[in-house]
Image (cartoon, rainbow, N blue to C red; front, side):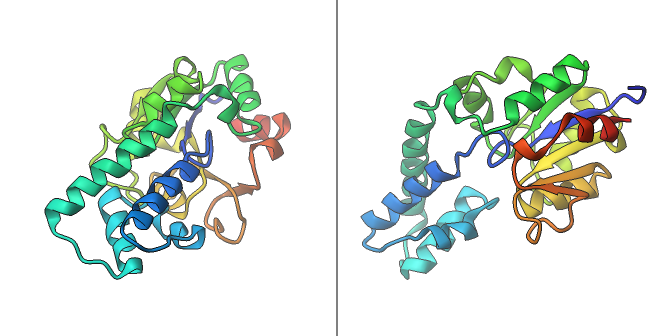
Length: 218
């Protein structure tokens, strides 16, 4: 394996699935305001900031609130979400992730996390992966949300790599766009139709073979 490459992973939907906890917290918030919030509606919140998410949710319920009330609800929602996060264990690592990280470690390939979540380091600690990452980029490091490539460019810098030598794993359209904008190889995890802009798409991490990785690296 000649060329030095670095791998950058998004967190939610790639390493773990915390989307379900966000949904439960938003659903409870909607119920407390007197309306229902469905999983289908929750799809609209993926990759969207907390503040924007609340605005979308309130539109569904046709509820108007003061800025002050919104701020207190956002704190409440995050507090409930973190209660779920604190209960996370290594069992929540998605299938195929450990095998892939082990392959990278065996081949002395550095890898970073590139996530917009400020809770990313805590989540990695809870599932026992924190020590394995060479670098972590989280919501505290970035000022521009995906599809802006900032998160991945910082990741490349922290790995000491040129962006074009980095390979990104993402489950969201905005993340794929960000990786492409950074001139990195984008690998989508999820639905081929949705992630059609990615260089490669796999249903989940278990479909990624050592042979595919070797070819990619070489």
